[in-house]
Image (cartoon, rainbow, N blue to C red; front, top):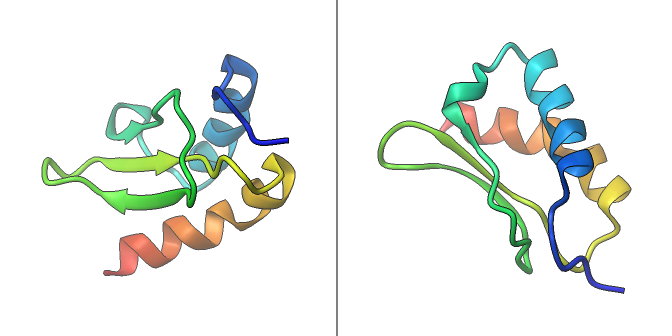
Length: 75
């Protein structure tokens, strides 16, 4: 079943990952609408946008988030 909205509970789980990586929460944007595919990207203003994947199970997607963030920061 596709994810329709990113709840506060899911955002908290994402922020646990970004906190562990030492990212300032002011520089992280998490849209409430998931997309397919999800993505992690740098915005023109330097912030990191984390878009949850709508079709992939959240736990599976979350398991790849740290790697996605590190890959995005390296570019």
